[in-house]
Length: 314
Length: 105
Ligand SMILES: Cc1cc2nc3c(=O)[nH]c(=O)nc-3n(C[C@H](O)[C@H](O)[C@H](O)COP(=O)(O)OP(=O)(O)OC[C@H]3O[C@@H](n4cnc5c(N)ncnc54)[C@H](O)[C@@H]3O)c2cc1C
Image (cartoon, rainbow over all chains, first blue to last red; front, side):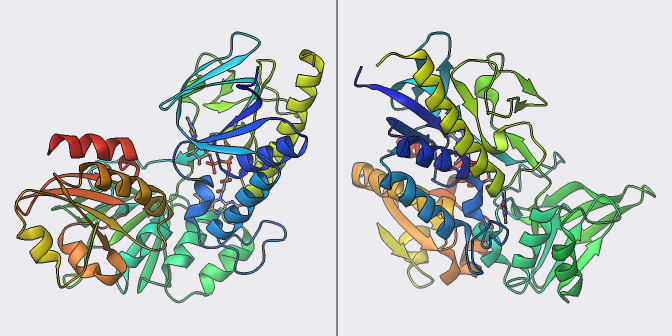
């Protein structure tokens, strides 16, 4: 039985790390599997101002570093591997990764989400050539240039503010006539001289020759199309896209109950399959943040412990 | 791995014969830092057949833009000084890079 874990957590973001911390602290044999980089989405942001206790200069990477240390300190094992297939039929759950196969009495799905795309012509072609989904990765290219941020929520406006540290002008393109971001974030954005706003607008097409050189924007109220062309001297501009997320749940389609692609759980993070739990951004819920992801992770771990006590004899 | 900069890029990449892989990265790019150890492993494994190099774009921003790189990570394969293939952002996984390298050895 030694190669069977009590709990395997798929995903090393805040939800998975919190689950790992709670599970290993309960002395469960715990494995966290992460496909790419520890920390998930939050490591791509420079400022996490709304996680309780995260002090002024808490960046995504610094917060995650502490979460990883804490989970490992309590004995959680961490492996880098991408899970490609799951078998939840038997009492022992089997996970197949690119590097190996893993078995566990219970599973916590914490695969999170990824950025939603605009879906317009040119977007895919110019990804990495002016179209970006990560401000901390790509801001440095646009020092003293112009950038556009697509979206109107917290993430769009906050990443836009971060970009003002590099770009000379940041224009938010939003499909409504007001922002969805929290009021305090809006106030800061409106007070920032480098921030500009294009309301009721959506990006229809992105064009260029190897790198972004122009884009077509539509006013959704009037139907009017405007072509924005790069400043001649710059030759290009940035388009940063923050228009929401898509859950990483393809793996579980037809196996686990979902709603619009998000995994449905009860308040104990239980899915429709006994012994399989879900936590974090991957769940159908109303607020997708670090604070709720870690809360979900903690509950899932404690419920997994309970499930094992009730279903497996020592 | 060769560390590229404004001074040696032309010599090491554009004027080089054969395949050269350039890992474009930046110090605040977390996906780049997660990928970097895998690139080093590949350099160990295939370094005798492909030249492996990296460029910190914060030190050579214009040069990167000239190579039409405006996003990180970007892993570009050059052959005889010409770009022949690139993996950008989320395409740039350790496995995809290895697949690409294998094509040019
Ligand atoms: C730019 C940006 C700024 C943000 N700012 C804030 C903020 O200031 N405050 C805040 O509270 N929230 C913020 N958020 C939201 C926050 O990042 C998320 O709510 C949080 O990261 C969700 O955590 P999670 O663990 O559920 O998912 P994720 O962070 O998405 O982590 C999921 C992990 O699972 C891994 N994974 C996926 N599939 C597999 C697989 N098949 N096998 C193995 N591993 C897999 C992924 O690689 C990833 O590491 C921000 C998000 C973004 C993108």
